[in-house]
Length: 155
Image (tube, rainbow, N blue to C red):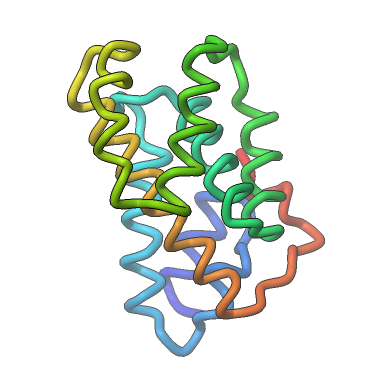
């Protein structure tokens, strides 16, 4: 395998199928992994890690994507601190809307800003939820099966 697959395996503790299944399109894997790291793994982002994982989990639930549900439920379990109930309820609604009626998502912005107070948080939320809509569709299109070692990559 190439450097991108070695890099992912080293950094994540394993190689998830969402990357390994693209062995013939390494440039795509490189770009995909770069975006994932930038919006999900980097520190000092507008949303804390547990909120990012909660959003990923709820979007995957809304899209009924078993592959991503498993990955992000485990990552959420590994990173969960405490998300206030009103914020969890908002994320639940947001995930449903962005997955089923994305043109209505903008109608939720004011309420979210009342909860979080920062445009950067809204922008991060939109990017994370949109990314997982894409990832869910990748998982479906590639008929991804859950890796036996998937928990190793859910840190």
